Image (spheres, one colour):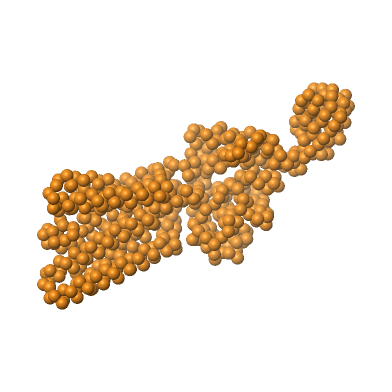
Length: 287
Length: 276
């Protein structure tokens, strides 16, 4: 079973990252929400409508992972075709398509056929295709996998511009550094279940883990730490706590000492999203 | 709307990827060779001062063989061009960005079917028209009921197209090709065995022909088309390669139409239900 009991609430107007190892069920989840795959049991809803509702897809854009197109078309023809499929009038598309090509940096290549495009160029035209009908919700499955650093920056800017427009972006990516600087919130999926969520807006510096080695740690002291920390656990002579800012660390240390504990070592380390990912997902299963 | 967009893009694909043009160039080569054959035979008749009746019968038979070749080319061209359209797009993932658009899946399948049907109509019209023009110009013969014959050949192509698209919703391109060409081969063999029954007087051979026609009613449509187009005397006197020994009935043609409609409905149903 690729996905089970998956329930996700994504706030409107947010850039939401969907993270997990290979085979966790990320792409299957997206395909279910888009009606490409049917759940063996239960129902999938998106924007308040069943995923099988064809009309709700007028409000949804999608860039599939490993995007393939009709390679005999030019990028403009492809955008026009996808726009018409989404119900956009031909007259509107005549204005919108050149703007989209400009947005993704493909204007100089507008007369080439897609068969002449590199993987990165196809990725860009795929992104434009997902935006052609100005959707409310945009699913992007690995949108930067084939792009160089310039292309990644462009995609990042486009994603942020979509958020400014009021659209919600659902981003599925393995490039965690990209996710970290682009997403407002992330969810971690493993074996088809969401196992953790993080609001990256609350901790723009990332999560900070502090390992304190000492003695005489008390439960009262732990309770008092809650105002500065997200979590605190004692294992023998080691206290491990997490926080979202380095600014609170002096207060944390003062509190521990004031509570009567002996401190031999106080070691903070910044956890990147990648560290967090590895910690949450556990060992590599070679998938 | 979605149906016509899909039909349009399918038709444009055939034109842009030069599928139709390549088939028409190959068809033009066939017509040239066919014309040379007709011309050489006509010269032979003039040298030998063959009786007009005999000339007419022989040239009519040659014309019918030409039209049979067009029929075979059209069916094979239909199968080969449509074979990859669903299975290939599912395998490559091209279908994902299309199937999630606000159009029903049946429109995607029916649109592709319509696009290919339009392309095949052009091919059959041009090849049939070219062959008949050659027969008239170089052989002095025209077939009986040419329009009805062309319509039947077109129906045969549509049956092959529908079966190809239907199996494409289940199988990979290669498996689909083996299956559809195999079915057509089976119908081809059954049809000729049924023809042979006229000489061997074997009712069992007729049954083989009937059963294979029920399984894949492609070749049987051609035999009805041949019956419609050849001179009645040639057919009844068996002075032709397609004698009137076991002519498929109008009911069998109706069966082919129903067969096609059911195959299209099954294809659409399965495509709507399957995961992509």
